[in-house]
Length: 394
Ligand SMILES: *[C@@H]1O[C@H](CO)[C@@H](O)[C@H](O)[C@H]1NC(C)=O
Ligand SMILES: *[C@@H]1O[C@H](CO)[C@@H](O)[C@H](O)[C@H]1NC(C)=O
Image (cartoon, rainbow, N blue to C red):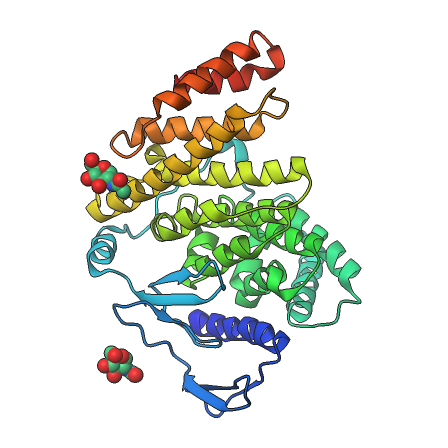
């Protein structure tokens, strides 16, 4: 609860910063109200605490959200909507969420626990200073120290591979929110800063279940999603997806919250940038979708919750059509110079088709085109992955 209130105040700061940029002046009358001046100069006040009901309502700038709400982002205008979680799935989840969240820890990516090899008291002091700088600059409009911030983030990235530092960062609740603010495209930090902030955050969360849970409970998931949705730089987007994925992977409740509407909304994400980087960002989105919907990676309790099954099925259905459309467009192109995207589409499509046969099928037309392309690729060694991915669809 203490942590939540700290977090909420920071969320207010984030929104305040955005509002300030649109010349919207806000001052507090008392602690229970947020007052702001609208475009015509009239003062408007509303309760600081969002009053959630069963219907989606707009969240006003600066409002605190109680934890556990269903939050949606209007992709067109960035407005947030929130309501109480539907009672059924929520109850099921609440009843079935185990006390300790089981997490599979891949052995190939193990973390250093405790006072690991990289931990030195002097470095720890330096790390505190790094966090201080991040916290200070994240709310500042001063961009003169951007290079310094860049180097600081690089140094932090190096350290947060060690759980000791990762935990230090996450437990300082202002640490994570400051990084989230730096990686938010709306705050107008340059793309290299936004990108690095997400790398630091994602690295700290990776295979770190306590840190994931702590940020999730603080209600950070919507902010991670916002950062993905608002990003227009392909390279930074790739890193925001890395951070988001590090937050939800293996965390049952985060996964359950993210797998519905938010995941479906990612279909409309359009990325700009040079071709290779853009391809990479799109591939990351598709891999994230594949991971989230892959029931083999779901804990048993998610699979046994009927309402969650429906959520996954609906998302599988939507992404199945989207991937089929994208793959069709790729197959219609002559030649096949860049395989990465079609390979990712075909692979994800195959996973969805095999796991959600009632909700995902591959049309004859697509199979036919896939067959043609596979033939056209012939024995080209460099296209072996592409041929393999296509042959699985046929
Ligand atoms: C919250 O909304 C409900 C339903 O509209 C209303 O009955 C209740 O009084 C509201 N609570 C507060 C504190 O405004
Ligand atoms: C998924 O398949 C099930 C079983 O056929 C069906 O009841 C459900 O409506 C489907 N959902 C979607 C979103 O297509």
